[in-house]
Amino acid sequence: MKISRYTATDMRQALRLVREQLGPDAVIVSTKRIRGGGVEVTAAIDFDAGQLEARATPAPVRADAQERAEVTSAGSDDAYAAAAESFADSYARVQAATRAAAGETELDADSEKDAMGNELRNLRRILETQLAQLAWNDLTRRAPIHTEILRELTEVGLTQDFAAQIVAQLPAGADLTLARRLSMSLIAQRLPVTGDRWLDTGGRVALIGSTGVGKTTALAKLAVRWVLRHGTRSLALISADAVRIGAHDQIQALGQMLDVPVYTAESYAEIPKLLETLAQRRFVLIDTPGSSQRDTQLAGRLAQLAAAGSNIETALVLSACTQAGAIEETVKRFAPAKPASCLITKVDEAASLGGVLSVLTRADLPISYVSEGQRVPEDLRPARALELVSSAVKLAKTSGAAADEDLLRRRYGDIAHALA
Image 1 (cartoon, rainbow, N blue to C red):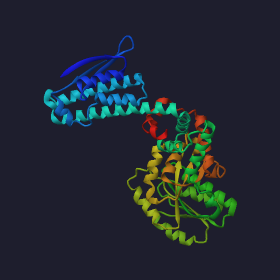
Image 2: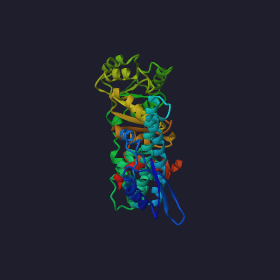
Image 3: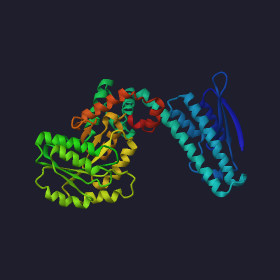
């Protein structure tokens, strides 16, 4: 191995000296600042381990590759010096793993392979992090309005991909006020809603969802609103929740209060016959048992409900208090029931609405109604896209949501070039 030390006025000249004297296979061992504003670079060329290193993937960071990265970073010597030191440290660890694979340590073959793979993954992660930071800083300088909107959408709770899609559609010359209005409008356009069609035209609606999301309360609000608008003669209730203790009694009590008939189904297989007897009823609401989205028997029960009749519309009830990841999993797990719409509950208890709106936009699942309280039937309203977006923004301000620079770099650094 040949080790040499070079000094120059800046990092670019030092790397050029390394490449000219040691060749493109040279490896940067260390870098440091010296008095007077220059830099000192220690480089090495390993002739013995060359064949083994050639088999490692990805290839080591070379002097010419580092010079190209330094040029891409818009001439920032300080940023590149920090990146180069990280690269050198990671590559030193890769060299240790390489020597282990060559027999210089007593590790067995499997341990050597695992160590090499871990070091290479670490090196790649460091490279990606450094480049993402540089890309985000460059975007902040060139498109400050876009980065400010990204910050605000992140505070609202929108997912990374949804926020990036919205910002990518903003015009380059828009000021901050116009960009805010356009971004809210673009979100609303992507948000599917059904309007008040259930209470206008009726139908056969089965409410499904996880345990505790408020299906029975939502059903009660819909039933009372229907009675207030159309009377009792065209409404019927079906209780298909044979799992929760007292579930049938709740629906029976609601039926007695509203003076509407209530029917009990011990299984989904009984629902088609009940619907035949209720052909004259314009609006039939079906209460179903709550299930964990990870219940192994859930898919089978949902498929049975979907097969109960083509005239049954299943509506997925989602709690706004649930994290975006759990909501996304719930949407996937309840897909066998083929939900045609969803109903969002507990909006008054949520800390953020951006997550649920992002998931529903990606799933293209229309929102029918929004429930935000326990009062029956006052705390229920038809879903309107602009109102939901406005509520999400107000909720973010009320809760004091904030997105720092580190979070924004990690979320958008790798796609900053596409947003510029």
